[in-house]
Image (cartoon, rainbow, N blue to C red; front, side, top):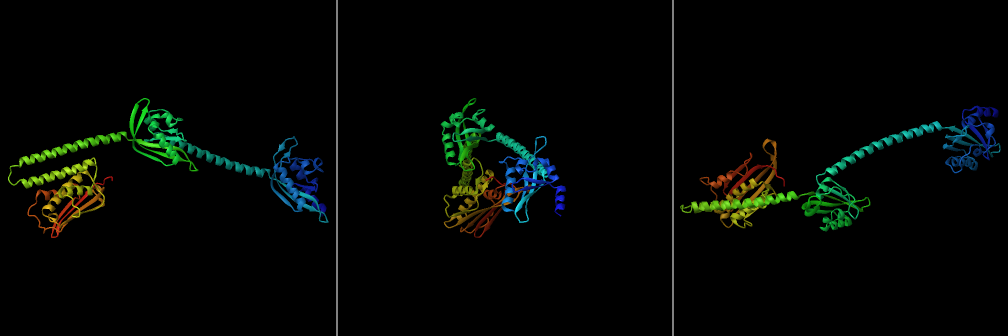
Length: 484
């Protein structure tokens, strides 16, 4: 039976070797000799590490030695799942081999450990396949990284193009000395230079430093708080254009590192010099226009006074005419103050009623949202409210000491002509506490003016009701939305 088992081990295709407790090779089968490329006589009687030398400091030596020592010390089997153990070829070279080994104790009849049976499996091809798989994975990952890097490079180029082509001026300052690290074309054009990279602000733009801006940059760098410059005059001494004063809107924005420390400052802004100059010219022209309009109104008023001076009974008509001109002049004044930009409803009402009635305090109640009217609509509303106030002073709620007027307005989103969006504006003038109200027998100029409404757009409506408690006038109009 023992001979049969020994014969089976001898002809087994799996490599087997038997070691004594001194780790000497005492027997091996043909498969072991074939796998290790050795002759039986060359290795029999030698220790494992004499037969197959390995650097004692190498991982291979340590793995094999530890496994064999474990069997000797514990008497239990031990396995090495994977070990690289290079084998010397007959030609003297070394061949890289990977093994999986099992060390099984063999005891004598008394139970004492006598031998260690090593069963090895050459897994070199399997390991190479695994390495190839891993290498393919690495190649795929490298390809993905390379593609991502190409995308990042392309994106970086696009961002740099956007940076250089940005309409506003941009510069990046590095460090506490504010060294120019990046500048776009608009910034270089502003300062009149071709290249200032690597220079400090004080070196490149000494005139800016003299105006105190380096101190501002120092404060931003030190505190980490941005600085906003709004319409600040800055004198620049460009080499080609010479000295020029520009007006700038800009921000000094600190750049924070991951730890929260400031590493630099972004300078970004716009040159608003031409905008300021345009506004100044516009203000000059509007003031001149207002002056001429007032002179024209004064001339018209003088002509009317001269024309009807000798006309019997014309005094009341002249007074009404003058009041209307004054209301028109007041409206022009209000719009001139805002450079003929949209005017608030409350401002138009307050100015017009106050001009005709004086300080109205609790006699006239104004209630409605903050809403802007175009200059044309504001003028029309001024004339209508002037007529309503004048009528209330003569015949209505403001003609006594107790009557009151409530002026309220609302704004809702609606549809205008051709389906465009518009603001549905409604203003209600309501008088209470005055003398009894009767509908006039004839329609004068003032009533016609009120009935003309405040807009020529479709949807405009005027409703005048002579109720017993007092006059009620409702104005409705669809107005084009304005930018507030």
